[in-house]
Image (cartoon, rainbow, N blue to C red):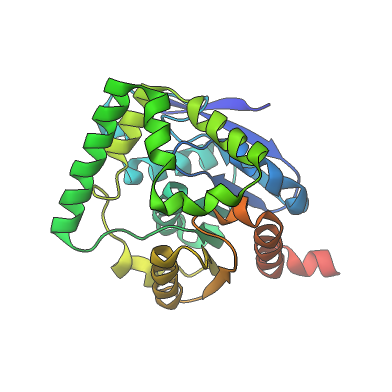
Length: 279
């Protein structure tokens, strides 16, 4: 269950649960608000807002290509929080959602009470590498529209980045695949083009501006993002790093109980009403 909230000319689908300090949950590419359902029982002391990002799930698929950028998405989410009357919030983002979370963290400023980033990057610093990545994502978008969603998902899941998913229970892998196949091909293609890491402004030089406590979660088997995570945790003024054994890129799926414990403990330590709760 959930509701659609209109911000400007965009409607975003939101699933709300619990009571307490607010936590905004942002899924990865081809995910949805449903991504976070297994985590919610561990976050009962918080008001969670799980959002379908633009082009995903039950949120709008804007016709304007300019609507698909990480920066625009962060602005839309800020407007969503305003529309829901949220003052201070924490943000948790995975992969694509983690990139959006970093941009949103900078936009929120003092309204951000905590940040959790799972398997995400602040962006690509080398301009030539950014151009190459944007071209590659454009090619993936073309393939998706030409060959269909099922063929695209086959290729997406075959990436070395997701190799460790083969150890997941069959039922979990099938749920993940069904979630990916539930999306609009046009929506995912637009996200690939507009929200490509090759088209976003890299934030490495801005991480020092994130004043809130920040937790960076990476899987030990995901060597690329583990290295990025170590560097990011050092660049964040109040950054912490959690390297989870036996997990690759999708830590929340591969080691769900460890991920839930790490995140819940971090949020409990930094919750803004901590003094009132202890009194």
